[in-house]
Length: 253
Image 1 (cartoon, helix red, strand yellow):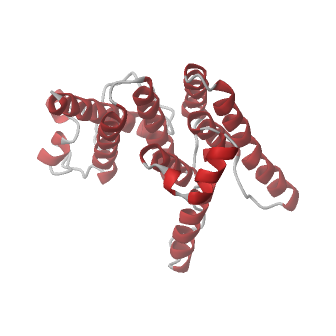
Image 2: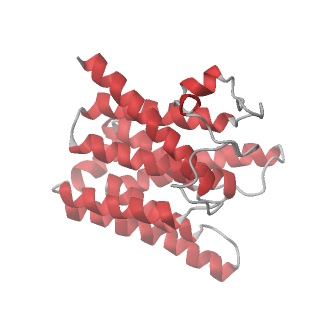
Image 3: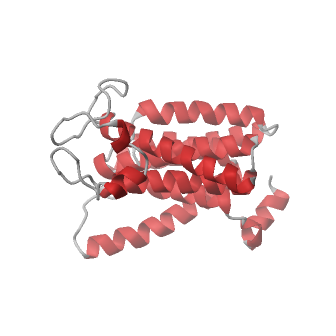
């Protein structure tokens, strides 16, 4: 029975991944997410329902549009696979529970916002603000509202300080979108984890950023994807084995 449920969750995750691809393409272009129905961005031809099956259609079509044979970006497949896989991992870890709903909700917003930020250097309010609101809702339902609310406040204050400092020295240290993103992460993970997320994101971001700058492949590296990736890591990895975190968890929570 668990295999059946796991398969179902994976499929649902793929469907959400497919919908995410619509959001990722249309929101930055200010196109309605309702109409028109799915179409090829190159030739404009409406995509048939049997060519719009998550993951499977991309593989069958070999990453090409059936009508114009234009190449479909690999991103479409990756988003669907990542979303489906993370939904499945959430079910394996939490089963059918409020924590499962909280996990997949966070993952949905995280994947969408991160992908748009990587492609357009943009954090759309139409995604980040609903994510923030849902964070408040899950914080309220958790029974530890103050703990998660404090996470949201600290998550907003830290990047806010960097943002104001950047304005003073006339150098961008963090963007306005990062304030909402880290506040959102704090609401979902709790205030202690805000510091863990910042540490991991800064470490990985620095390594990737330095590597890419040495190769002269980037001028600006969006920080939101690293924040979200670190937060998702916290969802699935037990940091109680990390002694500094164990200390904070015991005495400061």
